[in-house]
Image 1 (cartoon, helix red, strand yellow):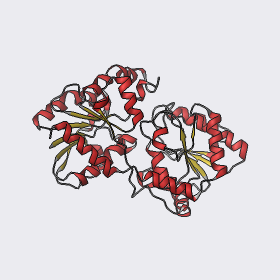
Image 2: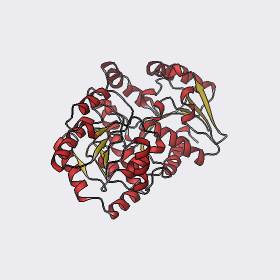
Image 3: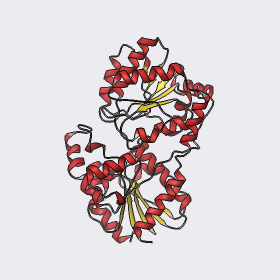
Amino acid sequence: MKIGFSAFVMQGGRSGVASYIRELLRHLQQEDPVSRYDIMMPMREAELIKLTSPNFQKRLYSDFISHPVVNIAWHNTVLPVLAKLRKFDLLHVPSYRRIPLVKECPIVATVHDVATLSMDAKYDAARMFYNRRIVPSQIRNADHIITVSHYSKKDIVERVGVAPEKITVLYSGINHQIFCPAEKSSARAQLAEKYKLDKPFIVYVSRLEHPAKNHVRLIEAFEQFKTATDSPHKLVLPGADWNGADVIRARAATSPVHDDILFPGFVPLEDMPLFYNACDLMAFPSLFEGFGFPIIEALACGAPVICSNTSSMREIAGNVVPKFNPHSTEEIFQCLEKTLSEGWSYAKRRQGVEYAAEFDWNRTARQTLDIYERVAGL
């Protein structure tokens, strides 16, 4: 097979979609030594994807094409021409907003979620119009859809009108070489040196996006927790600034416990396990997720985790993670307080690590390759 793969939505490696692209390509190289892959991406992000197999080739384009409006136009005009000229057997587009409406070969698309069809005001008016009026047609134009949870599949069927048989659920994996248990004292010592973080802490790993990621309610719950317990804990919020980050920072600045709320900024991949291994709790109050990588990453490190009971998180977190209503500050507070006061036993940590081990990229890559072959008619 000759496969075109669009990698134009790496976003500096700062999102779950970027993790998906990076790890899927890394493991496809292990699973498919025969097919030829053209990986199309902007020059400035070339180093984010490591290629070691001779049958995988990067095709680098001007960074100008990365601008969202230009990139959408490129996918609908230039990419179909390239697919025809290069005789692709299929094209994989891992971002549903980039699926071409013009088709010169079969298209496999990864749709992580359709949050914009159920969440009002997730983006500005222009982006919401595009996501609600144009994107459903793009999704329906794909020959086959990969999604990352059964919740997302149900959402795509009901909200977009795609036939269930055109959708396959493939759980994403995590990098178990990076996300694994480590000595807590060592992780804390490294955080103290690199991030000046030397107190016990609760962490929420997410980009700073308001209202979707729900930081404000977590801050309010943390205030209640500090008042009720006189705890020394800090609330650490690592992540890149996104839409509405200023709202989150402003709310933290006016908090009576503002000195205990820390924003380390974007944290590189290699440092994330330090936060998971050193924390006393990883809280994940997001309002909507198609998958929720940090839940599984934290469990793989043996961290105590609590998360929202909405969207795919109930499914992905399974029975090993206490859950709360993310729209209720009181429930978030109660779950925080209960989990920290009761502690996380060795048995619970082991259960979390074993559960996270089921999320395996090699299996996901093999299943993705099966879909490629089926869609290409091979």
